[in-house]
Image 1 (spheres, rainbow, N blue to C red):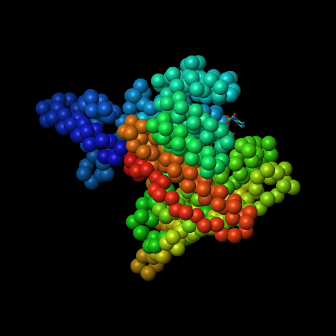
Image 2: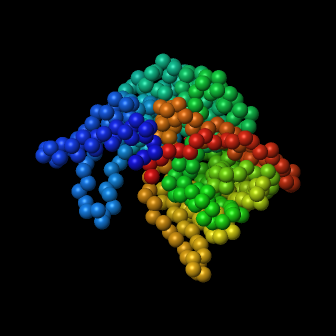
Image 3: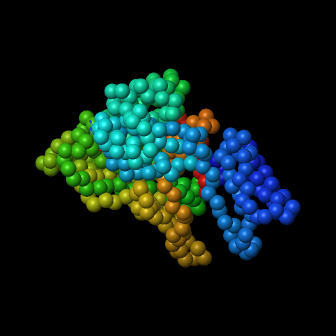
Length: 423
Ligand code: NAD
């Protein structure tokens, strides 16, 4: 039974099965019974089937029902670049609780093509100037911001003022000050703000988190991770400081920072960074080429990480405890992540590679936001989570420039309740 459903949804599902079972007992033909109780209780209608396998077989698992499209939470996606076109629009089309209802772009022809592909009308297309008119569109409840980093704060604040909840891509913004303004704007408007940390919704990372919480690796001691890629076109916005806020650190190094924090459940108290600048390379005239950093946590746990724009794609993380190790390699990919762990068993090191059903992490993340809106819950990765990563990013840069350790205050809790995903 999924955890996403309210108790009344679960009761409705049970009622359906009993209704079906009653029909069989009365000699009815074995028809599938679609029930309406779920809808009456505010949950999606479900279709149940009777068991048709012997008890020796694992029960067949049916997917959770989707909400009818008209009841799903509507999203306006702002910025129609690679992530939106390649991942987010396809993910939205697969969501159970979410749907695409508007597009915001500076390129009307591109927006028209995508609107046609995803079944939206011309009236659902906005540009950056007319964006504020979205306030009058009741089909949009959430604005998903997928623009260059320097534009996240402006569009979060405008979306909140238009009365919309906000899902914002990482990094949250280019400075701690902007992150604070975004949180305040959403609080003032009484709207939710979630930062799109997809890894925190990804099934393999969640499985690793569970292992860590159950102390299966013993006391956690070290986290070692790299997230690097080799950049091409020197003209792209990621290599412009004003638009990107920095180089590989806020773009890909942020995954290492965030994973060290959520897997350990701790916050760093000391940061040591070092950075390589290489202005002779036309790609690195404004931003660094690579950053290495160490984070120290109160329990003695440490994270040693590297992020670069100058080496072939490498996206791994490894967690080492007193009793075992576990790694995701790749660990930050869109798909194809792989979990392995090693433990001493009966005096022998045994390496496991569990098979965990793949699921689209973007879909899980977006549906989590929708469930938070529907059930008035705080998102698991709210603005405070993005603010804390930005504080650490600024401390790493400051440490690299000053050539010394920078101490950090620990924040209060930066996360909302755990996502209630289908297992
Ligand atoms: P992109 O360059 O492919 O797309 C950016 C979009 O913003 C384009 O549609 C572009 O036209 C528009 N734009 C508006 N003003 C612009 C300007 N002044 N300069 C450049 N583009 C401008 O970028 P992307 O890869 O889609 O990244 C967008 C955001 O999503 C970034 O914040 C990035 O960090 C984030 N991102 C997250 C993930 C993830 O896995 N969560 C992956 C990729 C990107």
